[in-house]
Amino acid sequence: MRLDKWLKVSRLIKRRTVANEACDNQRVTANGRPVKASYDVKEGDVLELRFGERSVKVQVLNVSEHVGKADAPAMYQELS
Image 1 (tube, one colour):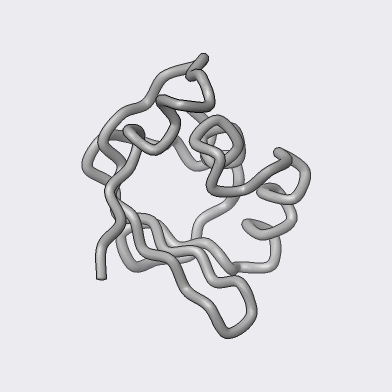
Image 2: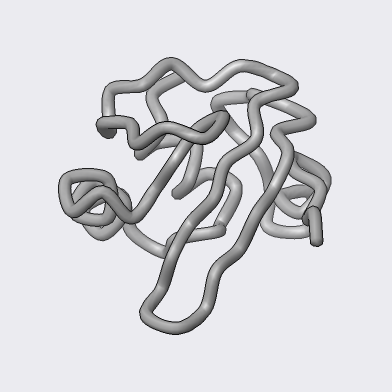
């Protein structure tokens, strides 16, 4: 699944266009390197998102096309 779509489905970023812009501005890294929105997300990937001063680091646990709002947090695990 594309990174921008995964970020939207997991609800880490609200809209796919915003996720796409974050990738274009190199605010998203996968396994330590900057990636584009077309990056293919796989289980086990470590993603880091930077929002201004705040940074969120997560490990991908699940990649699925359709997820309900209640199940979205089960798609990733936050790392410190």
